[in-house]
Image 1 (cartoon, rainbow, N blue to C red):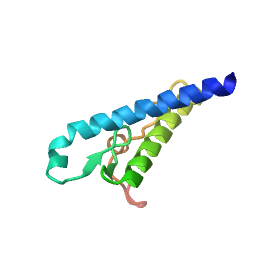
Image 2: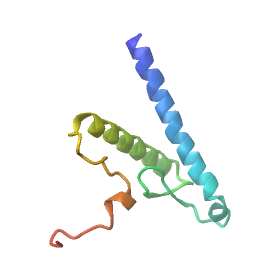
Image 3: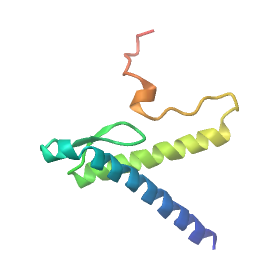
Image 4: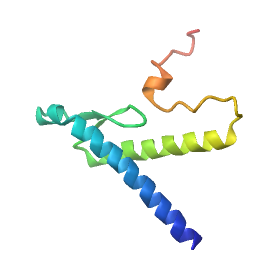
Length: 100
């Protein structure tokens, strides 16, 4: 019973992420029609080639991992901790190690 429930929840979670990606591609359809296949991934904000099954799967797996990390952090972090940032917009531009 427990394994069935776990699988059911995992399937629902995966379906939710796939729907987010389908919506991102719907919003980018004008660019896709022009042959520009890069789409910004939901959750992480990373760019991926929507015509590449390998890149799409990787972007979806990263989104799932990011959502899982946020959920775990929310359950285990101190109450005063901010939500775990997972998107490139939340994290800001890359910084070199010596920048202050």
